[in-house]
Length: 227
View 1 (cartoon, rainbow, N blue to C red):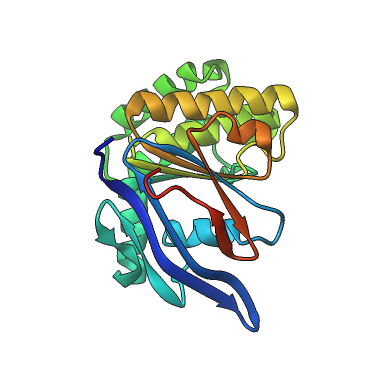
View 2: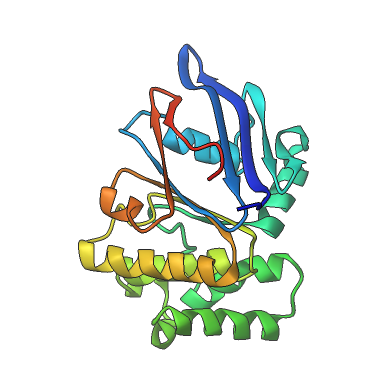
C-alpha cells in the first residue's frame, strides 16, 4: 500500500507494581487505516491505549505518532500534542456535565485558541452530521447515553485530528445505539482520512474495522506487519 506509519509502538512494556500489564508490545498502524484492538478483560488493551495516547509513559519502549516519539516529551508537551494531533473517545463519553453538548464539542477548538463563533459553528456542524443537532443546547444529563456518545465522537473529531483512539466507545450502549455511534465514528474518520484504533471486546465492533489485533496477557498474539 505504500503508506507510512501514523502510529507505532516499539517494544512497549508497562507494570503496575508487581503486575505486568504490557510485555514487549510492538504495533504498526499505517496512515488512514482502522484497527480493532481486542482481548479479554485484563489483557492490557486499555493500558496500551493510554500509552499510545501519551497519557501513560511506558517503563520501556517507545510510542511514535506521525514519526514523533511522544514517550520522550515532557508531560506538558505530551498533553499539548494530544490536544493538537489526536481525538480520544472513552466508553462513557466523559463529557462535562455542566456544559451543553455544543459547548462540550467546542472545547478542543477553544483550548487551541479558535474564536468562539468559529468553534460553535464547527461544533454544530458535526452535531448535525451525527443526528443530534436538535440537542445541541441540552446538557448531558438531559440526553440519552447514545446521544451523549455521539457528542463525544463529535468532540473527538472537531479539530480534525490525524489519529483517533477509542476505548470501548460502544461498551455502555444498547445494540441499536452502539451501531449508530460506531457507524458515525468510522464514517467520520474515513471521510477525513484519519487513522482509527478502537479498543473493544465485541466482535461486531471489530467487524467494522479494517484489521484486527489481539492482545493476551499483555502480549500481541496477532498483528500484521503492515496494518
